[in-house]
Length: 638
Image 1 (tube, rainbow, N blue to C red):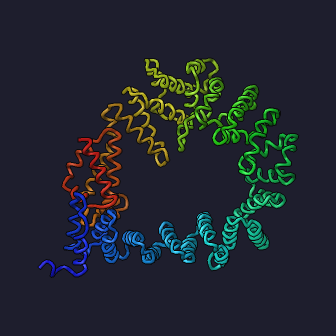
Image 2: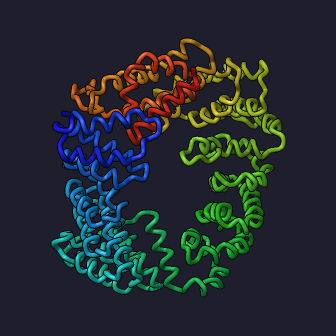
Image 3: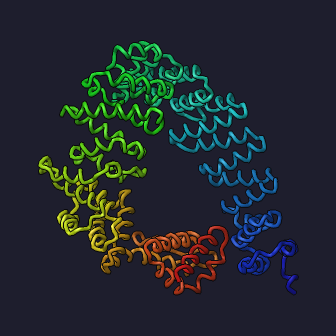
């Protein structure tokens, strides 16, 4: 009786499955099999899950009918179509996979990932014209000029590989493809630049510039930028000077003005001939130095020349044209360490000159700024100078700000502490009469950092900490506060952590909506738990626990399709959220609580909603991963 009710398609599937090895100890896989030939034969998700499981076991042939069935049942599903195409590709049925991807791209024509997946398949099949047409559709479907240039660059690489540059140029030249004349010129010139056809690129850009000028338009800055770049690459110093000056006249930014001046110098002589000129005209060399260092064609030559020539240039000239000096040190210490010994000597020489003249203080600060982020083995070579100039640096942001930078550089302050052999010498300076009233607050913070750095937890340290009034944050002191808090967080004493937690709590409102907000909240949570204060712990953990319970509750409410409905508290709008998203957020929350030492709360909530976990386990792919990772946290914490 059973087989009379089973369609012939599913009977065939049943026969196939009889040859498929059983999946190891996964009851939910067996359930999926029964579902697919039972009452859920028309459920695309269950067909897709079973297909994925078979595919992961290397049984792509067995998985294909279920991928096909899922895609037939849900023809608008991009996920079902992508997985079907992937399976077809594995089975070397590339043409069929291409058709599937083409239908996906029709559903999502602005999806660059789908486009590149399709292009890759077409290229493997040597269907180059079709692959180009996909990328051209992608370009035509967006209006972002910067994105266009990036996409045309990728398309040019494809055209170069398959000797189709001329066809690409013809397409991009058509007004029907890109109506805007300026953008057409930019795209065409970009293609030619990549093909190293610089003369043709220059001609196209000049024609567009002429058109803009004759029609009374202000020349587009992007056209001028390309003209300056192309003329520089060709070595045509006459045209480079012309377009650099035109750009500076129309768009007189400091950068454009400086480059116009540098272009004027390049117009006189090329770099090789200018070496002797620079020896006689040191001020010109210093003015040109930034560009020479940024230019990969001249950087390697100018570094040894700069190291040998700058020491004999008068201090006044160096001070007046200082912009290239920090760049020189940064370039050497980060990429050309073979010159580091000479660079250290030059740095110390310049610093000694600047110390003797108050008018040089601005460049003295820039000199120190060039050290932010350098390797510790190099920074130690400046320990004497750093200690001697500590009071000078006290009111400079560069002393404090490095720790808070997004790229993870150590602050110059920490570099100093790591570099000096005796931090008491700094403490003595801080107590000296040279410390003015205006530096009092930063001086006190510096003292506290040094005491914590030395692990001095005497009563004097506690009294100093209480005198700082950290519960009333001042915007001018925020950078020094962050460095102080960084030193405090390594001190396990509950008294210190209590003060730290209160200080972070007071600063949370100042960081709302900024990139620093999440970090400050995290540090507040850690310090609150370390403090042992029940009120602070409650304030720090309540939002996380509420999120944990919300996610468990949502997961328990998911329907047979794996969806739960949530309501936006502000707008009242409702929308579905899938179990994958819920389990993902649930796992993130559980990891966060584990980091804070609160895994027991996860265990408690897991057992409260344990009945629902039977259905959550009946997932595949990421769903299985999320749930298994959550179970690990629970089992390790019980």
